[in-house]
Length: 349
Image (cartoon, rainbow, N blue to C red; front, side, top):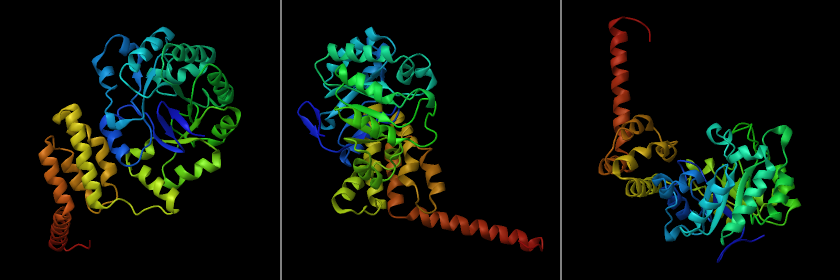
């Protein structure tokens, strides 16, 4: 089934999941260039929006090249969600998404995010109120249920569809699971069979082959990738290549990793300011450098740098492999020192 967001029609799309402190504008731009079809803002508190909080408004920053993109909001008061949806609509997204899936305590235990899985009638009333309050399509993202004893995703999806929700993303875990255990896509498939609206599957997609095979295996209309993209934004590109050729491309080359990393650093510095932007890239650097030989010391050094030009200098050292020479020399020096110590003590080492 084709998913429509205004003028955009998405057929078997690969979506970047909304992730707090991850799916900001810089990361979205990287994933968009590498093949993500649809993206979401980080989730935004409805209460913060109606209080005119600066941080909440900044999360709604949308660039022309990001479309199609949705703004995701969450909250526990229907009136605040309605007002927040109207504010978000003015920022020019292609759809409004309601978060019913966040499992963290500070959200769920206050009756927002996945907390509303404990009050399904209120959840449905919230959906209906938001749908009626805006002109844009309204979608939702949720989990299977609060816990294993209260899985009711099929019934929830039917009710959401009846009040005008136009697409539903389902994370294949309960709130009680958090991010532990395996995502259960069988429940996602059952839900797809029960409704006419598009269903977007989410949970544990970490390999390009999975992303494509899950369309046929579970019948979903789109696949949403979250943690699998954090350390490997090439997953979107590789999945599309697998769909076309049946083969997953070779991993990104060292030079390509460096080029993409520099681009990500640049976006982050422009969006957040140089100091904060460079420092906040520390959560991404491990993924970009994963698997490179003798990388530990280099990674430790680059994590201490706050200046963009200095980071770029180090990355060019990485490109020409001079860091490996330094690492090997240090290893040899340490080995020689150890050997001298052993010889002087006439001990076996």
